[in-house]
Length: 158
Image 1 (cartoon, rainbow, N blue to C red):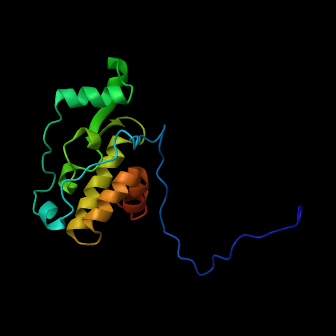
Image 2: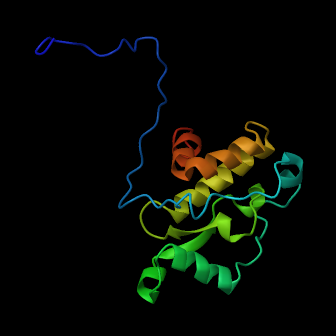
Image 3: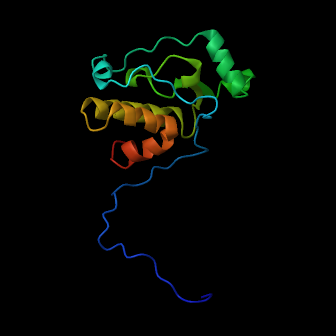
């Protein structure tokens, strides 16, 4: 009924994570799923975990860089300098070196640095077998920022 006093749910037996939300400035840099859905070459954790950590991804050809930046609308040098191209699913988590797996991540605000933290933690988790490779890849493809909050922030890996 309008004007009737209500109370929130009973949370007395609910275990809430103990973390402090990090301060972020600006918008969260996310890829557009229509342009960068993410592409993987393997879902075999043994293949990924036998690669050296931080394996160097193949360089992104200039033609692919130009195509990605143009598709995202970053056609001027001033706009392009605000971003760095990154793999949505990183090479050392089975990501493919293709245009559909590359996006412009913001250098400032919440973007490139946080995404790299997430990639690092997810690789550790995959190789320690605490998460499947497919689940790690899917979490990045669905929303890397949500993966950062879940696997980096909420677990205290900041």
